[in-house]
Length: 325
Image (cartoon, rainbow, N blue to C red; front, side, top):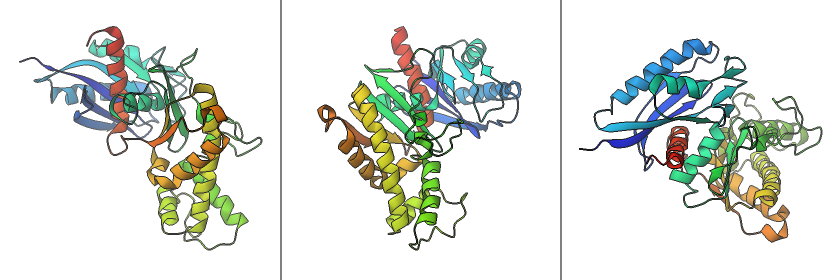
């Protein structure tokens, strides 16, 4: 009996690294994880990663053939296959991850950043199936984006294109982790909406169940729950967050004319609380020739292991380019 073709998807995060064996339909046949231990040098990490790959693949190797390995990683550069200056990884300036994994396992390996992997996951297995022009916006601690044009991820000249979160939306605005002020992710992200809540507490007098919650405990989920329960300040925080995001998306639409913008990540779990104000601001500020043409959607992968599926989708896309399917 012929072996089933599969790819291995790896998502490298600051806390955990998640691995999964995924078939061509996006079904995760087996998965596992290891602690990244980001404070340790990469030389300590790699042997543990290799062991996890071998152990996971051994559970399906009797019936499956691994065609390649896709990796999603912070500051992952698709062109060079490197992880460069990742803020949450104590791995130095550059790690030649694609080369190292290929040399160890002898199969095709591709690497990109997590937002680009998410875009590919949506295109192959999620809300962007059948689309060739779309944008995925990841609303986590920061704001990432993956831009797809003509069915391919836009990497730019150096492999790092798509940093929507670091476009300036307010001159001399909030301080960003990148060292500049006014970046979009300081307003429209899980951490951004927390900062908005604190500002609202200082500026307004309405009662709120969140006033007694510490900043670290004030998660996007907690703000969402409060808004759904009728907390007016939490509702205002979502309105302001969505308005800023929608205006930024209107600028993206003018540049790329996408079929859809797909929201993914923690803040997107709020559903209509974030969708409605974002859509309203997007439509109000979009250039008239583009109005009504770009759909604003939620990810269809949020209840799945989206990071692994995205990394796997990267490899399936590479295999298609190589003509080895």
